[in-house]
Image (cartoon, rainbow, N blue to C red; front, side, top):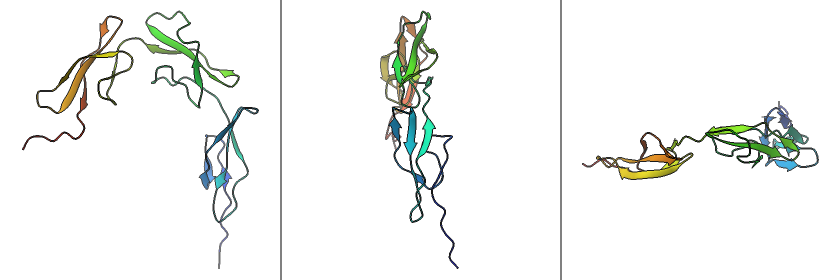
Length: 156
């Protein structure tokens, strides 16, 4: 006895959400301010068009970062001493004020990374295993940052 495959089914609570099937690449519909995609479930039937309202907000770990494809606007226009600030805009929707401290900070995901700030005192650890540096911004200096050197092999 054969069982019929379920058709694709949307999960409109999240962008590209499918309860059944695999999402196609989503597209943004400017007229409706919505993300749209289809849940494919071959060889069964695809879902109807899935939709999720687009809402942009602050991406707090990224300088001038916005979620859901939003764009940072009004950069550093608010008077917030010691902080970067911006708003996020997506179509007609504008977020509340986003902020990030201006204190220098390490970004250990990249060599000599700072977020925000500029890398200074670039060096390698005595054992040759780590890149080390500090981040500087507006006369302030971070603690020492370090990142494992890619492909490091200890001496034999």
